[in-house]
Image (cartoon, rainbow over all chains, first blue to last red):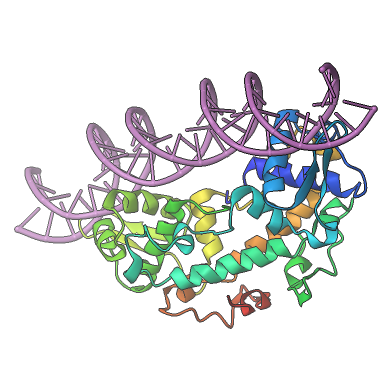
Length: 156
Length: 156
DNA sequence: CGATACGGGACCGAACTGGTGCGGATTATA
DNA sequence: TATAATCCGCACCAGTTCGGTCCCGTATCG
């Protein structure tokens, strides 16, 4: 499985919907209609996304939501982090305590590397790319750092 | 969080324990003692790992378990797949049905790419590397295909 | 002042997860 | 052949998490 929560999936959908209309200020109901996600769920998601700093909201009669920054600067990793907390494949990789093994666990540091790899994979894709009708991931570039594109080279 | 199940974490631990003694035939109790995981849990894990073809078992008085192949040819992705089923970040990426959106979901194909990236990240690390006391991932190479190592270049 | 829309909770049912236990099958050894 | 050790396949249970809904307070515009 190793899957992200369904809510996160919906979250990216809402975000891409938002990315398609950067100028407008869309309310929750409108976003629900466009993204085909249940309205209460969308509302819940948007609250989290606002708290995560990815979306800004304006209240009042003609209020709504819009992206906090350009769609090219928001990555899938950002969305996942906002909705599920920091990305950490293993439990012990995150908070130091709790792991009963601790000392004898030689593989902990290796897990961290895998963690990092997954994080980079998610960071390599921006909202703008997700919003594109076809997968057009060729020039992934993030915050100035070059990113391993080879990851995406292989196709099934 | 995007985390693997705790059982999977334990599973890799048991596997690495097994990898440290490729010749021997260790029983469940012994493995539990060495890996510091509860015995019933180890037993459960081993059943799954056998079913997944990663471990072979011999029954009878001096029975036990050993790796089905060399530790260099078993990847973390293999272990995860055996314990949690096929790796698929998103629900809809897996089985075609169930997704109510389907047609309007432009990002589905993009998710598949991310899926592939994560899968490759997990495939790039072998049991032998996990068993090594220090993270020594430099020459990841898998089934002859070259693998994006750059993923592991960045350190925190 | 009233209508619209966001904000922050509480809440609930369903599903999954981790963990335990038991009877049966298989093999080595005495 | 009998016995003990060991794996095998289930069924079972408590706890937690997840998806989803609802309600009431607050801010803004007309």
